[in-house]
Length: 506
Image (cartoon, rainbow, N blue to C red; front, side):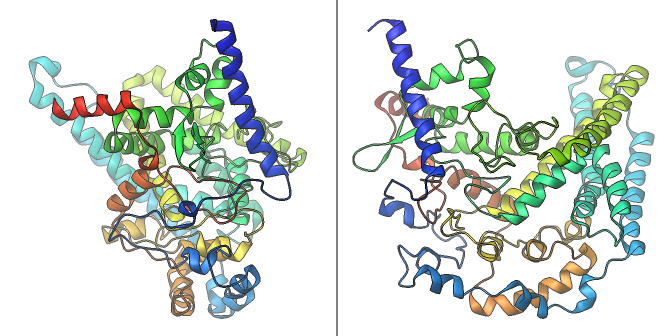
């Protein structure tokens, strides 16, 4: 077959895969049958296991019907009744105190750094003074780490403003939140809008928002007659990941998940897990707000978002927003543009390197930290995700949210308890952080004896590696309760097997 004929076959295969996903979602009943392997938890031996196991949550596995499964869960009013009323009270004093504390610590970090470090490299540079140059670079990384700990809490406070938990006054919430989030290039109103959708549809495979699992087709996989996964033909993947192909950058960003299967196959488990960590932590937030990764599947009109359409957070006409959001999108953009203008002016005055060291390093680490928190708060190979027939709000909030410890203990306070009290936050986002610890204690005491509370004691670093190694895709978006699968289940081709063996023997 000529190259033109191959191209047509490739286009047909990709179009068929995309159409199949879309049609399955928009139909009232799924047309595929899930294999038994997708109904079991895909976990690492000896690791924490969520109490929401398939036999308790999945009507196709459980002895209970869907109605009986849903009856296990309390109502929101029942949960609210176990929390002391004062936990719902918001205080301008304590909210502004938290901002003042974070700004004070940031000022201390900046003051010490200003008087101890220079943005100019030591004399001799890397070749002439390697020890001094490495120490200089490490010192600026230490600064970025401490500034992240100090200023990163303001990210959480801005997020709290978007929930209305900062104060009883919406105008105060929005002014404070807009200033705080704009200062770290977060589009305040638009991100608050999508984040509210994340709260409304937690772990909903179709209407969820942020850290929404892709299905196997989106990851460049197909299922053979035996029900096991295979990678799409290489020419199909190459046709979509080449920026010089007919679809250009649009096709590349629409199908960039296709590269995951290829990358895993040629690099192996550990290297692929490292890539997952690096890309998610240091590019995840940016890709999300640009509408390229981890977004929901339906637009604000309830219709499927087609490939090549990016639900970004910056265009007023983005499929993510209804028309009423127009001026809030503009206001969010203005906030980010003001910050970018200040950074550009500072670059003109002091140099790009100075701006990068003082602002760029903390910016990357703050976003990496927040992505770490949100990723681990809803992701584990034993935490379920739901199709339209099985999802409801309380089930998504409880089964799909995890409380975790944060070490060192000082980090709990610096992060305003967002990691250790996240189940409470998803149930009652209006509770301010300074009451969340007390509210969580009451919620946990009520839910844990019933087997309805996710608490994973795994240290954050170990949990991150576990998630990066085991949580890559789900089998289907429309076929019942789903648990994460991973690329270790995908057989290697002969060529990739030989390459991996060669690497290990070198």
